[in-house]
Amino acid sequence: MSQTTKLKPERIPAHFHPEVEDLDLEIIKVLQQDARASYRDIARKLNVAVGTVQSRVKKMESNKIIKGFSVDLDYSKIGYTLTALIQLQAKGRHLKDVETKLAHFPHVCVVYDLTGDFDIAMVAKFVTSSALDNFIKEVLSMEFVERSVTSIVLNNVKENYNIPLA
Image 1 (cartoon, rainbow, N blue to C red):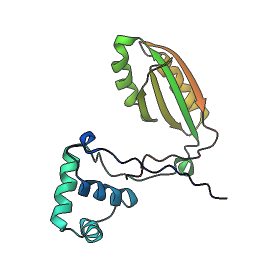
Image 2: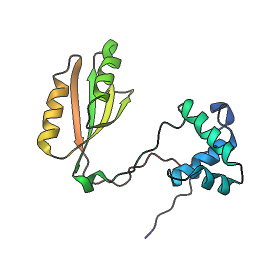
Image 3: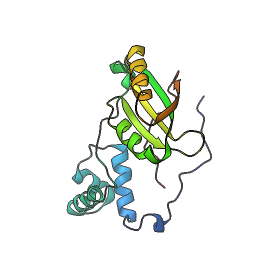
Image 4: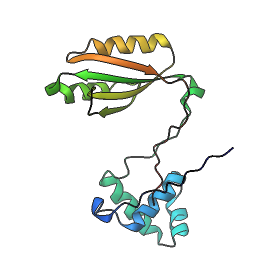
């Protein structure tokens, strides 16, 4: 049985993104559906010139609105069957240093700066539990890391960062 929600994508007020125009958002929507779409295909869908699409994509890339184009993998199908959610407490004035070091570990997918009981949350993926164990021990041995709590994902219900734009 398919569940739907009555919640609609939020309309982003223009003052939150003054450098992004409506056409830019339409281009982003097309790219969210198919990041391999050519400028010509996007232009045809949006009824604009190819050069317009190309210049707007390049501008969004230079403004870091579009950070890159990547492959959306099912990591479990290539062996990364363990996903860990790891929360850390770190010494306050060294928080940025710890986060920067964590961001360079190859298994780490995301690093978040938090409010609340923990300072940092990260998501990391592993092939084996021994690799996870070694990673946690290495993180706990880092200077300024005080405490960690690790949860293992049992079932991935949704993993997608493409929020639909209104």
